[in-house]
Length: 272
Length: 272
Image (cartoon, rainbow over all chains, first blue to last red; front, side, top):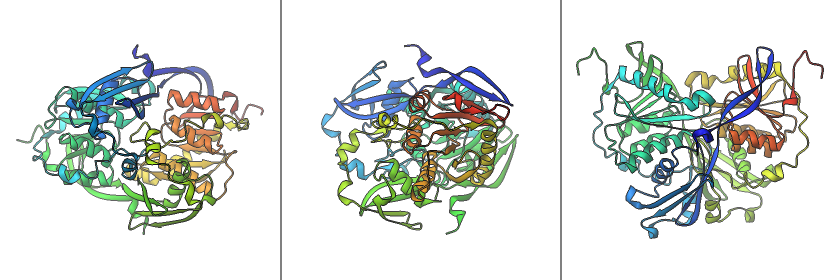
């Protein structure tokens, strides 16, 4: 299937300074991917239909369904049927009872019932991490975000998606987009997991705001730095402090804010 | 408690055109509100701690826990304990089994496990609606959005919240903010429900993007028009078409796009 399923054209009325025109507008597609696990209906993700394998694997890890790619025996995606069929290696371990999941829900900021059966509980264990020694060069932050912004053709066309990328601090390694900022991040993390990409020396870039859930998801993978185009929440800052992570926000043009771990920031004129 | 719990100050490093300064930044608070129903833990909402009663009532309606404010026997919120305790009028009807909820989850675009036990199922019933005869005056759209933008002091201070408002087409009637766009909408709808506000002749304004979940939530209350500062998804447009709703997006400055129900748009020079 072509990449055109990610965007759709619609006739619209465009009002501009008192003038009304009928034009065609490009709109981000919303695609409902049904995920089955071991033959049973699990969840439906509303997403952008690209990098669906990365999305499913990343999502399953984020939800605690799998810990490692070896937990995944098989993943088949039928794009036309909007169906992802997952078979787990250890069938016996899955399926917390519905009640148990139900009781542990946390709703994330943007919407629905949240993911994290895990993320609240394991913040303490996450705090036992190697010290974050990742030096962030200010000029690199700006350059990375500039490239990050340029890459999002789907955003430029539709205005309706979030982006996420993985970087080694000087270049972008992977880049994903999705109507949902969590999905975009899951796509990055799913790809990294399936390809055994070491993450302790990487940065996540995101277009979306940073909440505790985003911080926890990135922290759980041992990634020390998040750079966002947008705002963090107060709780995300505090959580990042506790975890020793570097949080950068409002990275736009020639500006950014560093909210934690100030000592990580270096500039070209500053001797290391 | 003062309104200051909605925002927090943090010392940050601000990088601007090669200069680094230490300043205090204002950040949107992320507040975890635990909701209990009939004494049992139900869910935790990550939100902005304002208009919490509106949030809880609106959320419960959106989730199908209540259909009407009479279903709510009591709601007590302890802001310091971050706890909302709900007692329902008809205790027997609540609590779908965990498994049943589990099987019916749909994840919304921005993140976690989604809300809608209901929204997919009831789109067909929603289609049996009175015809949408709400005339949208172009100049009013611009004026309403301008006032909407001015009202969001928390956004202006933090850059980290979404806004939502209810309007009769010429003025804003209610206005809410939240780190989550769904929460902001639930606050508006909760207030309307608790105050028996007629909704068939109202508009919802939102700063957030419009997905099918947003459309369904608004449609379920019989509201015929959504105006957003941001983008819709393809599925949201199609759903709004089916439901006969008017969808306006990218309403900014002197511009906006109308995606459905073109005949509703009138201009001052055009005779009605």
